[in-house]
Structure formats: C-alpha cells, structure tokens
Image 1 (tube, rainbow, N blue to C red):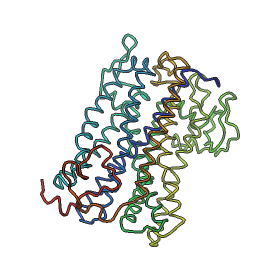
Image 2 (cartoon, rainbow, N blue to C red):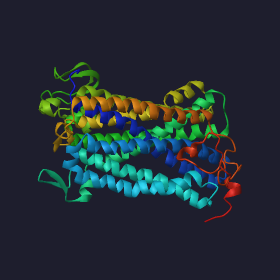
Image 3 (cartoon, one colour):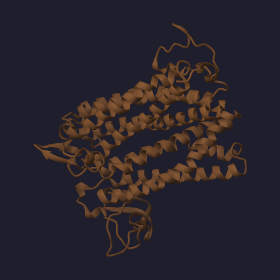
Image 4 (tube, rainbow, N blue to C red):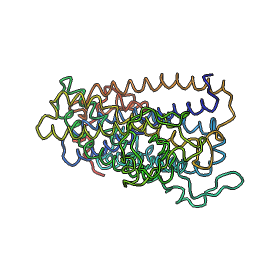
Length: 480
C-alpha cells in the first residue's frame, strides 16, 4: 500500500513514538533546573514571588514528568518488539547504557521526586532544596546516558564484533565516542532554550490578557535573559557539532546541504533554499551563495565539502527531508536569537512588559524550541540512514520479522492511543498554564491528615488545580 513495506511502517511507528516522547524530557530537563533556580533564589532573597512561581511550575512539571515516564516505557519495549535484530546485534552496548540510566538517573529522580512535590510542609528548607536540585541533576544524568547510547549508534567505537554481535572492549571509548560531547551539549542546551520560550510564552499570554503582577513579569524576564544568553551559545555549539558530523558522517552533511557534486576545485556554495530530488540527483530551484558552504562547514574559502555523488546511491540519506528539517531548526534558532535581542532592547527602554508586538512575538515563539528539537532529531536520525549503527548495521537488517498487516494495526493503535492519552495530558497541562501563578500560592492553609486534602492520593495530585502548599515562612522553621 502506497509503496510502503513493513520496515517503513516500523520506522514510522518509532519516529511517531519518539517524537511524542522527546517533547516531555526536554521540558522536564529545563523545568527541573528552573525550579531549582527559583527555590534557590527564594531561599536567598526571601522574595515570595520566587516561591509562588516554584509552586506554579512544579504542578506543570509533575504532569510533564508523568507523561515523559509513560511515553519512555513504550520506547524501551519497541527495541525488543520491532527491532529485535538490532537488540541482538548491539544489545551488549545499548543495554548496559540504558541500565546505567535507570540505576543512576531514574533512581535518583524517583528517590527525591516525592520530597520535592509533596514535602514542602514536611521537611526543612535545606532538604527540600536539596531534593529539587537532585531531581534536576537526575534529569541531566539521564540525558548523559541516553545521548551516550544514541551517539554510539552515530559514531561507534570501543567494540569488537564477535560471532555477529557487538562486544564492548573499552567502555570509556563506547561512552565518550566522537560525537557524544557535542550532541550532549546540543541537546541539553536545546532543552533549556525550549523551556525558556515555553515559560516566556505563558508569561506573554497573561500579560496580553491584562494579568500583570510581579510573578508574571519575573517569568518573562527570566525567560528572556535565558534566551538572550543561551540561544547564541547553542548556535556556537551547533557549529562545532556540524564540524564533527562532517568528519565522521560526511554523507549526512552532504544530504543536509543538498550538495550533489563538486565542480573541479571550486569552493562549495551554500544552498539556502531548493528541492533536493533523490531520483534526478540534483537540487532543483536552488538559491546559492558562492563560497559560503565552504566557509561555514570547513572554515575556509577554498576547501570542498563531500558531495552526495561521492557515495553509492544505497548509502545516501534522504536529502529531501533532512535538507528542510535542518533549515527549520536553524531558522527557528535565528528567530530565538532575534527574540532575545529584542527583549534586551525593550528592557533598556522599560517596555519589555508593555510592548504588545513583542508580547505577541514571545507568545508565538512558545513552541519554537520544541519544534526545533523535533527538526534536529529528524535531521540526526534520518541523516544516519540507511544505517541503524553507522557503518555497521543497516536499518533494513535491524527490524523484526513482522508482517505489513501487523505493523499497520499497531501503528494505527499507537496514533489513536497517543493522541487520546497525551492529548488529554497536554490539554490539562495547558489549562494549568492558563491559570497562571497565584499570589501567596505557598501560604499555609491545611497541612492535612489522613483522608484530608493535603494527603497526596495519586502522583498527579501534585498538580491539583486547588493545591495550595504551605508557606516556608511558617511551616519550614526547622533547619536540617
């Protein structure tokens, strides 16, 4: 049907589930660190605005964390159900790396998450702040191991192949493979930027509706400072990541650039826009800037970039997709930098919170970080094709022996269930965002007992609409 095979449906199913999943960890990583900063500022300054923001965003964090855990479990099962040959081939590397993630990051988060969400009235200030920091650290450790595993699939090293299976011989080489440092920094920074624009967009929405208070202004101010500082840093990290990819995965770079062949000794131009045609082996309607491709990708004006025709047709990634996914990511990155610069200019003229054109810009930029993350992952994963482990195992050899009908049914089921389940979760999370932070949200009302309101009965009770945690000024009088 439509020229698709069971392998294509398996890839679509994995792409669909991982696209849903990656959104939640990205916001979880950013919000966890944001909450740690908010509580630290509250402890240092005793400014209740930071406390109110902490309680507001901790509810959203709780919902987001729960959806991230559920969607992540599905990803783990798919390695065994749809990609069993890959698991058999490379499981000796990927299995332990994912196990390390559970033993370190997941256990750390699980151990302190309950204290963070429900211990505001139950423990001392230092222990509660320590718990928040540990949850934030746990999200970064999780990023470390997940990126180590995925980066090894991009640039494998530290192994031997014995009896048709990958056997690790140097774990430091496996973990710190050539692409890992760049991809780790790129993903972690992307999570911070995406969260900043998510927070900034929610603040802009409230200001546009006339809800102007110190908490809302602090949200926008902190988000725009993060955008101003971190978005340009992300661009620099992306440049280093690109140079690393050119060295280890030149076919991916050629596909990203839509660059088909080099002409004599001419430097490589940069194709701004066009339509790479895989069958015709050319980029149609190309708009080029001479020399700029060589300058950006090799940092010189005379070196050439490898072209797609330098590789056999069966080893070429789909340039049509990665050409545009990369440009979506980069284009949004420039818009983020522009938004940060606009915020600085308006801040100097004391119009950051009143300029409606800027507030609309910040509002519409809310999902930009998440869209850029998706576009970046599409570029990375599709650009690795036709390899599932680069240079070692082709994707066609990695899938399980399922029929077209089996893959069709499960794909439809995933789409229906995901949109119903996570659509409801996202809707609830956005409802919390629309409510906005409450002034004196942490003021003590009812510490609760068995069966009372303050007794958590379910994980998402941390995100109860009517939840009002006790004030540290009254309830956390004991220090550790």
